[in-house]
Length: 273
Image (cartoon, rainbow, N blue to C red):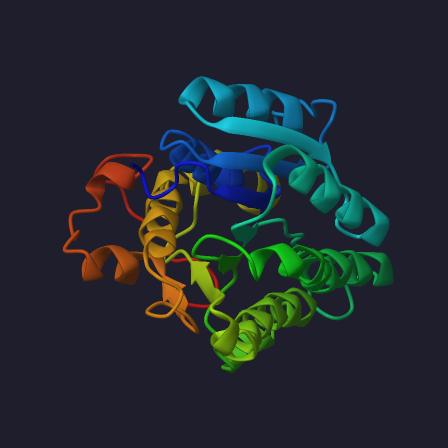
């Protein structure tokens, strides 16, 4: 039986991009996937909704529950968790993928954008784990996995966009903190981040357009890393801030050419690494 058969995986921001790629990878192995995201109607610039993602997950072989949830709203998180438990009976894995980004300096960062990044990336991530925790404690090889970088307090990353940097490092601090807090409870907590930029709507629409997308890898590289991490027991795999290439190298996978959007093309290093 697959390591993911009947395991219930709660993924924030799973309607598109990296979150959806992870969902499809695990669904193909029989997982129950909760698509916890805001998109109930399609934005043409971004593509995808919780319902289209759920349909793809079912087609891939998993069971899907689409739940409209804005993780800035605690009541919506609580309702999403309850809907998950009502449908699948519990929660085994939480993947904190939802995130807001704006790469602006102090003067150019409006208070509403500062608040958005911190209310989603930090507060929302914290509250998702808080509400899922009672079920994780009873879960099947329970894991928390947060899409955030190693904490790297060098001026290169602190100076240009401090508001965003703080929010992402806070996510990683929570990932490490939960590993310590839940060690005796048998719940793993790790963070994962890509070495290169990943071809997502955020990269295409907010950061660098098609030119940057063509210097990126596909979301499949992160989906494969998540597969590897979540197969490990909570006791043997917790308290790490992983880089995708390191996860694959530890499994003997060093030819990563298949993940490039443009085969053989130049790859752009992601933030914080």
